[in-house]
Every structure is written in structure tokens, then in C-alpha cells.
Length: 558
Ligand code: ADA
Image (cartoon, rainbow, N blue to C red):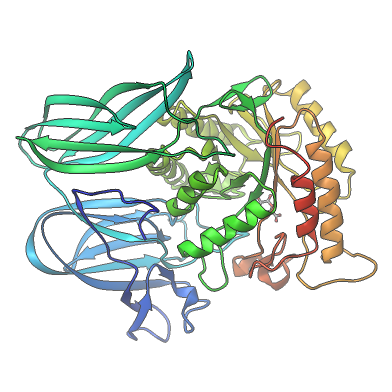
């Protein structure tokens, strides 16, 4: 599966994953051994590689001719790709899409090899030993397309509501891979209406963006309760022949900020969320469609209305599911707990900014995404850090002015950056890492933000709160790590936050227990983060019913 809907009717598109590929490790005692493995997958799911950190080569063949475009939805965490033995593209970061075009390949069979690398080094500023796992493999789909010289890279639809009608701003990004200029017509259709561009000239080896607008009076709004979706179809024609197409989906919905409130379609929303890692003991971070859908069923059953994609851009199939189910998404770039020293790694800024440049243009149309986040718990208490935050938040606005932005801080009363984001967000753990009374800690923090920072008057979110609970560990004295302690702590934490008038929402850390880097074994029983409401196999802990009862007792709107 590439998406939960077809993206092309004209352009030939084929998923190369979803079948067996040959896998061989590059290091260790099994070098040279070849395995047949299902794809997408991570080598931690293969019996001989559950703890392998190194490089591995994935190999397959395909038949094609002419201009081909290869799209890689996710290779963890560094990829080098070869076509017929020749390097064609490389990429850093497991969680963002990259692609390459190869012009005029000979008609016939071709060999595709992807070398994946999940080792830690100075070259990797974002994937570091951490409180989650950096898996290895071809973790998301690989797609082969045959394209014309002029082809569509993406369509962006920006809906806005005014005078009881919806307006859609349309942007169409195209590229001409030929060296010579070309002329074509373009058309975008939405809900029975269209915008047309005739006799457009594009230079050789150039990109361009066409802009247009369409107004609607009889379309349905996308809401959490009724997540109405619409297809937008773009085609380009030459001499009356349709030479390329691109289909995407969006919703007529608008996100805004008004004082301390985050608005969805003009109404102040209350975020009732969970933080979720892409992690599963059988699939590592390569969760199949059915596993993602099952997670969302649990999240909805809990009474939650939102997911925070901690701490990286998620699989777009998961985002498609959230669009379809009316679940709001906080999506963030890839970074967790980088110190000032980590942020001074010369690779940090380019790698973190690249994630933003790859995340936003391709995830732009998902109505479920209501906010962009950056740099979870990084050094926002330093001047150098502040410069980095400022650049990345500015970059977000360059790519998308239709959504607010934020970052999740843990710098208690030392954060310097609250003048930068649209929303002030904090990760707090009263009753876990310290036993301060939740109400006191929360109010103390909030008053500090109001009285001492440039975050005064902005919406305020708790983006993490929670406690550890080992599945099946119980005792009468409810010590920390028992299911009993976790359930009671979450009850107090959630009630305090959801009753705090100036807070517009909460994200529980976390949805399920997850595997973490071996280096993080200390303070992490089972070398896992055990703060899930369900364990890694999605088995309910005592806290499950507590969370459900509380989430269901608060509405979606403030
Ligand atoms: C942090 C961090 C999470 C996780 C959590 C915890 O807030 O953002 O990734 O590590 O703490 O379990 O302590």
C-alpha cells in the first residue's frame, strides 16, 4: 500500500515493496549471507538481526524504460541507493520521503539496491542513542513511476472560510526534466469545479508553481466529528493528450489562534491526545496498514481526539487514516532531547531543517494536521539554541502560513524561546520524576510563562505528562512502576490539566510501551520506555480505563 487512495490514474505507478527482497548485512559474522525478507520492514524483525546496528543491502529488480521516478517513503536511517550498480541518490533520516528521477533508462530489467545504515556517528546529528529506537531497514514503501518530461511534484490546497463560503487557494508545483523548454495546459478539479491554465511555458530543467483559486458554496466542512474529505485532481495536457496527473485529498477546514485558544473552524478546541511512537515488537517502526489502523481504533476507543507524532514525521498512511477518522495531528520534525553540545554538531541544523523541508510540502494537504512542532526538549534555554529554534520556526512559516507552530519544552522556568512559537507547550512529569502536586506545579509554570516570558497570552498546551507502569506488575502498596501507581498518577495529572482553564489540551506520554536504544537501559526497565497506557503488544494496563473515563468526560471544544 502506497496511500489509502490512488494518487495517479494516468502516471504509471508501481509499489516495489510489498514483496520479498534480498537482504544481506555488510558487517558482523553474517556478512555475505543472503536472506529473502518481506518489505517494508526493519532488520530488527529478522531472527538473526534483532540487535544489529550496521549497514544492510536490500536488493530487488523491476522492469521499466524511459523516464523513471523512484520515491522512498522511509529508509532508516541513512540510505544510499544504486540502480544497476550506479549510485543514484542518498538520504539522511528515517522519517521523511525522498525521491530521484532517472531519465531515459533502457527498456528492460533493472537492479535496485538500497544500502541502509543505522549506526550512530557524528554524521548523524538526529538519530542518536535515545529514549526510542533507531531501527534499520526499508521501513516504508518504495514506489516506481514512469513520468513524462514535464510532471507534477505536488498540489497544495489552502482552504479559508469567509462570508459563509469556502475558498480554496490552489498551488501546483511542476518540474521539466528535459533540457529544452516546453509548453502545456494544466487543470485542477475539485468538487465539480476547476481552474485551468493554458499554454504555460516552462524552461528546460526548471520548476514552477502555478496558482489559482476556486470558490465553493456547497461543500461540507472537515470536522473531528464529520471528517469530510475531498479529492483534488491535477492533470497536465499537451496537444489535447493528458500526459500526467496527480490526485491528493484535503478537507475544508481552517485552523487559527485567538488569544489563548486554538481554533478549528472558528471553535476553540480541547486537545485530548496521546504521544505515539511508530513502534511495535513484531514490526519495529515498519507498521503495516492494519497495525496503524488498530492503534487508531484504540486511540479513539480511549476517547482521545489527537495524536502527537513524537518525535518525527509519521508514515503518510497513518496521516491518511487520521484524516479519515477526524483525529487531529501535532506533527513535528525529528529531534528529541538534543543538548546544546548536540545542537552544535555542524550536521544538526542542516539535517533538522531538511526534515522540515521534506515534511511540510508533502504533508501539506492533510486536514488532520493542525500544528507543526520542532525540536522536542532541545536546548531552548540557550542563546545558540534560540537562534536554531528561530530559524526553524521561520522556515515553517515560509512553507505554510495556514497552521500554527510550536515546540515541546522541558526547560522549567529557563526557556528563552517562548516569544517565537504561536503556541507555548510544555512536557511535565509531576508525580513521576518529582512528587510536586500537579496543580501547584502547573500553575507555577503557567504564571511564570505569563509574567516572565514573551509567551504571555498565547495558547498553552501540555504536550507530555505521564508515569511508568510495567504491564502485570502490581502490589498492594502501589509503588512506582506498578500499574496501580501509573493509573492513580494519570488520574491526578489529567484532571489537573484538563481542569486548568488556561490550558487548551493535554498529550499523555505515551500511547504504548516502546523499545529504546541499548545505551538508555539505566532507569528504563526492560530497556523499554514503559509509560504506555497499553504495553508494546497493545495490552491494556489499569490506566486504560482511567484515561478513557476522563477523556470521555471532556468535550472536543473548550
Ligand atoms: C521526555 C521525552 C520523551 C520521553 C519522556 C520520558 O519528555 O520527550 O521522549 O523520553 O520524557 O519517558 O521521560
